[in-house]
Image (cartoon, rainbow, N blue to C red; front, side):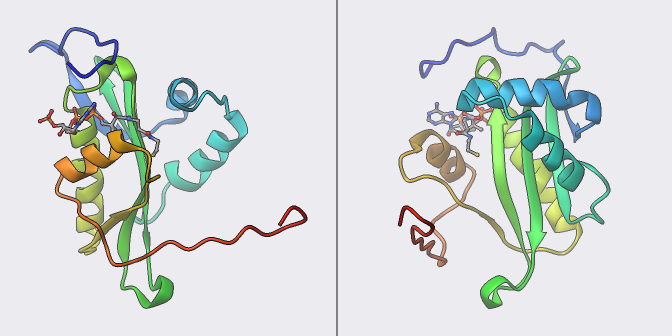
Length: 162
Ligand SMILES: CC(C)(COP(=O)(O)OP(=O)(O)OC[C@H]1O[C@@H](n2cnc3c(N)ncnc32)[C@H](O)[C@@H]1OP(=O)(O)O)[C@@H](O)C(=O)NCCC(=O)NCCS
């Protein structure tokens, strides 16, 4: 065990599913995000739902993992094409699993489902970006076969405070 407060491992009777998000899932998603980030961002999640949770022609995906019908994790991603000359690729930009359900394979299931969505529309590269200090998510992505890519993020403080 690696330190999270955990439930007993899902047993054979626990039904784990990954499916597209529904509007009724939003309160659980908002609560889960708040437990991870400490911020209750209801407006942000309404916008994300409108953009990624509704028909996106197979290019935008917002999936949830449920354990016995209860939301226990989510993943969000989209196909981005020809940014900086890069052929279409699948971008994962959010993944979270309820701390009570971690280390039970839900993160791997969510990533695999998003990958399938991207493969379905012919995309052959999956990308993500993470904070250099987030060793948990780095360990997770590495365990799923992801390695350092060739794109380098650059940044510049702008605005009145710069
Ligand atoms: C990263 C995260 C999604 C993993 O979800 P999970 O359901 O616990 O992952 P899984 O059970 O599918 O684990 C898959 C692999 O990831 C790695 N992993 C998972 N948790 C780990 C941990 N605490 N330490 C080290 N490696 C870990 C392991 O290699 C694991 O494989 P194993 O079980 O064979 O050892 C989850 O910990 C999480 O939501 N963390 C917070 C995410 C976050 O910071 N989000 C904000 C930025 S988008």
